[in-house]
Image 1 (tube, rainbow, N blue to C red):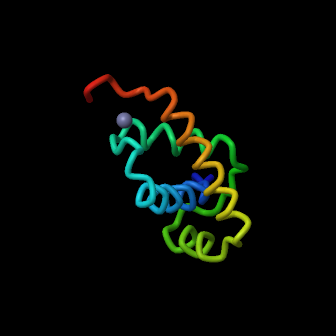
Image 2: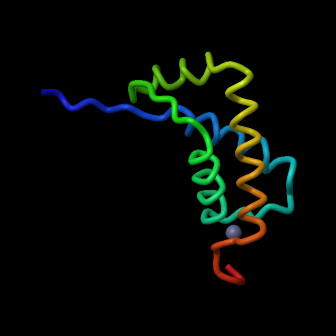
Image 3: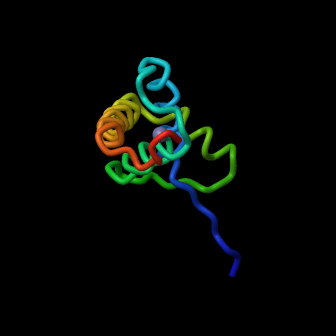
Length: 94
Ligand SMILES: [Zn+2]
């Protein structure tokens, strides 16, 4: 049986929300650790939406995703950023 590969396209939606967000919040730490934490927390608070893992399918799914999905992703990301700000996991001075 062929191996199937799927991907949660919310990853792309949240990633986009993250990029938009950090442009508006210069105070949020730019390190990879904080970025990853914020994105992981946001994704865990959102319902996963799976599509086939081909680039085209993911892009189509993200393009077609409705306003509600984008709004949910943005809100989940903002909450996640607050948590990371309160308790950053990066090392002091890093
Ligand atoms: Zn950081």
